[in-house]
Length: 274
Image (tube, rainbow, N blue to C red):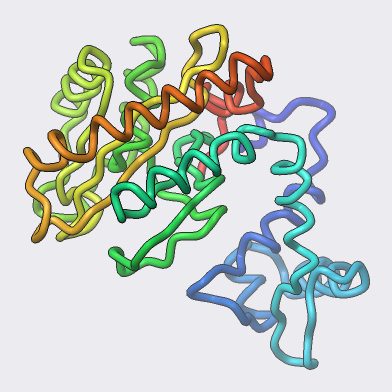
């Protein structure tokens, strides 16, 4: 966040501490002090203070040279998930869907410009990236992201596309704001999204929005498949109907529980970015 845009209450040291935690990921599970300082644009002295504080709190472990996160970091995400009952409501329905179609399925919400996996029932690995709860992808190249974005106000869609990094991830990725805007409006009309090998070669995915009792889109459920074994038409014919039925059951449970979100807030422009 630019310094001039920060509110008077903004605590920069807290922002930097969170940045230190986010410096660790699947590609960088262990980092040196210099690595963290460089990644977070901190001085070595500042990075050292943040890291040693996290060590004292039990969120980071060090052998004296390398630092790595500890399982205690999971508590931070669990605080969100434990107050957000949508994954609990959706998971039994996802399990039933996966048993029926023998393909994986996930529930995702929008956070800033990314989609985040908040529930997942896998069957087999179909992507090179490991997908777990907490995994993030740019929303505009995923079926779940597009089906949520499509239901935002037009002016917000335009603002998001104007700032999005539209560099293609594969030869099939829609890389034009105009073409992507037209695709989102088509998705809004038809009620589902199919993304064909735009996030990863060989991967097709279909997604349907999940609405709360007020009709607001709060999440989306997807089914990803191997492109070699599933044509776009077979995805539409064989997977979309059971996916729609699953989402209808999730929405019925949401109406009973009265859940309206925190996902609703996440699906708006929060100003957070990757």
